[in-house]
Image (cartoon, rainbow, N blue to C red):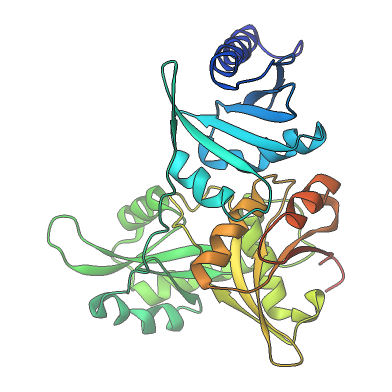
Length: 333
């Protein structure tokens, strides 16, 4: 913690003090020394139970909490947070490791209840009618949680929306809401298919394997990996890979998040695929949601070889539905 700015050190210290106070009052056993980690703090009780208070991004806290507990050889885990506890419970239930989740209200701990996954939302016929424009513009139509968009090697370049004033359905070109708004102001009089084709051509070049780092190939990295698996399913031992809907809708196309797909194997069976990049401790809990959302019976987590670390493998081994990592190297394809 010595390398953190003063404000972050003070924040981390307060989180540790809060955790110690809560555990001392509710754990029912002697508590050990508090240890800080990215996004929270943890301690081990004399009974071998790990208590972890998630302070930053509680919605992504199961992976880091499990990693902390496993590194201390804990026999069970209690996760404490003041938000997103319903999601934490839902993901925790996917593991064969004893996990309790508590919602923190001041000095009171409330047993959290699982929040259901969102229901599937169909695309309206009016939006679906513009699918042909996306195809004509050389983008790939993708439907997620009732939204029809067009992608180029995993990067969204257009989206069908309702005009907030007139209610008119239209296709907007651009990467993200702000980019689409700017594009509309600058090129609103240009035919949509022509405008989209121009953006697609620019983006496709930058998202080609072997290109140097560029903003257009750094965005939506997990979806870029998924697009490579669609082109080369043999990288994960499959005969084909198709895009699948994520369990939770993205709030921002520029946020890094895992992506989902379905792999067909040589015997005709199918497996859920979750693609990720970077060392993401929460990708396994995310896959728990993806498995439940698609009713899958097994899951493969595809990640660049450099981004697969031992603790992730250990977390995956605890999943109730068989889940394994497959390191992928796309440099040669």
